Image (cartoon, rainbow, N blue to C red; front, side, top):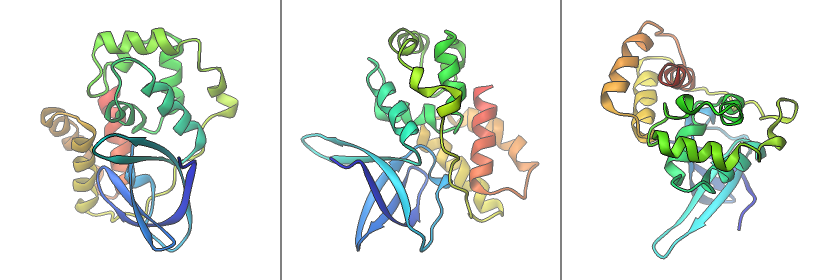
Length: 199
């Protein structure tokens, strides 16, 4: 099992990044690929690996705390990797931890694939298990994005929302708001969209 990979990000897609480690390209599924940037610098990506009969899948995180929260979410009955990534995609892990700690089921149901029963299960299973995620020890800052700042950045952000499981009608609803901010990076568009969708 991998704890982390140290390599160069060579490709960014709406649902994953490709990390080149000593000439081997690893496809790593991440919550928000646009937090990473393509370049020659080495990037440390914390890894959660799953192995099934048909596939090996790598899930990547920009911090150890983010990885640990993902693994806590995966332990909840009814939560798969796609749902856990969708919850983490907005980058505001503190808000997620607070919602769970304060029984805020309505906040959790705003994420794709999370209904009321599943949100209640998250609270039930994790409410007393998140002490390590206190505000003082919380998450590293996400990697900055150097994506294109034209409409291609907005298109990439909307495509990432689709990959996270958001419905077309919800995406169209936030698209109009995002179009009033033409000078944004893909990461900024995606973060703004996720805030709109979860508020």
